[in-house]
Image (cartoon, rainbow, N blue to C red; front, side, top):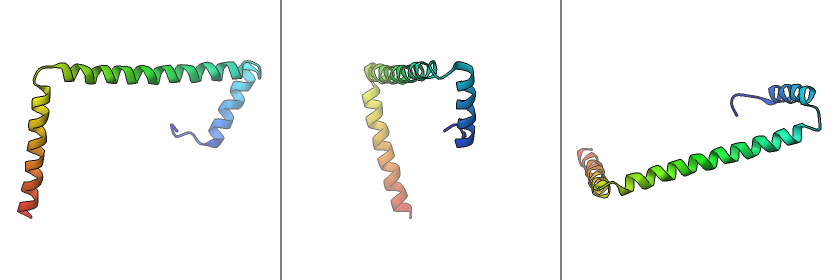
Amino acid sequence: MFGLGTPELVVILGIAFLIFGGKKLPEIGSGLGKAIGSFKRGLDDVEEAGLDITKSIPGVREVTAVQEKIDKARDIGKVLTK
């Protein structure tokens, strides 16, 4: 996890406890968790929208089918040349 070990996390949490206090830390943690979750959902939505756009472009299915046939032919060619 980002190259942080247990000692580093303990120091970071200790400093955060000293700065924000014990009452504010749960609120900060909750807000951070919600923000990370929202960010991940946003990334998923963008990725899904990108896939939808590429599927709606004319000829994409045909190109994908041709690419799969080319890949199969390469695989067969590799087997035959061995």
